[in-house]
Length: 544
Ligand code: GLN
Image (tube, rainbow, N blue to C red):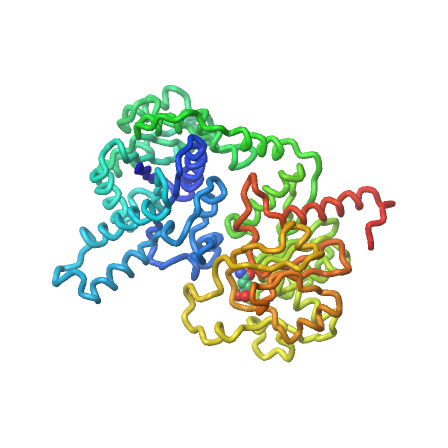
């Protein structure tokens, strides 16, 4: 079993996660079974209770773990099947250590960061290696070298590397080499200092990956090699990618990163076959069509809040050879000024998941606009609940219909809590989480999109469509096209008399990959494309 530890220097958000994922892509395509693990040095047990402004998107795994968005990159870039063991936080480590202490497992000893916390961390690395049936584990340590809260993790991986021996462990440090415009120079000092910080705690990185805006020349490479104590070839340039993050594996391959890693770990493997990956990039780079899609949400100014969603649109766009222009629309602004101004000329409207009442009326107005103007609509989780509220109000005439999440005393609770959720008081990890089966109704758009009658999709929500209204909605043309296996929960709904209007209670975006786009996103974009083409040729009648 081989291990790679990825650390980061100088600044946060430097792209450690993407670098780890891209290296995973290359090593997997050299024939290794690879898994990836992320350590997050914060005290939250998981990011599930964090605001997207703090943390970006909460990514959900099959087993219902609420994780860091880097796990989304891991799953999109590799075929690793991740579980809750693949994202470990300081909160989880302390929770486990304290539980052991209360049980009396430490037999009268003083419980300390070293060795008890570090032992617990090491055990988590061994656990993924055991569970994931793999040849190689890439472990990314969140945060930046020098952070106080990262120290126990660094100490633990230092010990771990000692224990498994030099041929089986490799340290890769991702660092920033800033370009100072005024001086016209790349600066290596921050990198030198962050590596010095690592050496202080006994870690000598084997490879330095340099994030940079401009190419780094030989001189700069030499300097980094000399002062950071690595061979010249172990200084890897990682320039900002131009087109897409999916270029990264190819860029790193060109720099010889995977070759270097294999040599260090004593692995003799042929070159990574990237042909399908290149084909995906070709489709992305040379689109034949363009569609414009609006994301109507409340975190739209935050880059990372809708990460998987934007990736899923990219994947589906490439599949259809279409460039997807995303118009980010603030639901709050629709509330203030009406939808037409913000959604005029759009080919598709997407309302993503969300919590809390801010912006909800704006989203409802967007769903109404999509329904009445016959613009393709995809509602995800809250986006489906929104469509149900809109339909109840404006088609069924239940003008005060709402979700009890927002108006608990509404006379028409078309979205409400099920009994098991009503009893829940603790917030963390108590939603309906993770993958479950959905049965599709033959002949519906959802069924046509999937081309199957049974699918597994990931969930993260508390509220559900209220059964008391199901019949009335179906009779009025809002069809239930997918249900949970026991028929107790509505999973997908769609409008009968509309080009393409679908809402799902789950999050399809979590299962989309570059070469395996999600069927619902592909179908949505196909409809948006038809909308775009009809708009360009106004004589074409697409209604009915
Ligand atoms: N707030 C809604 C619920 O809890 C929707 C959640 C979501 O969109 N992820 O059911």
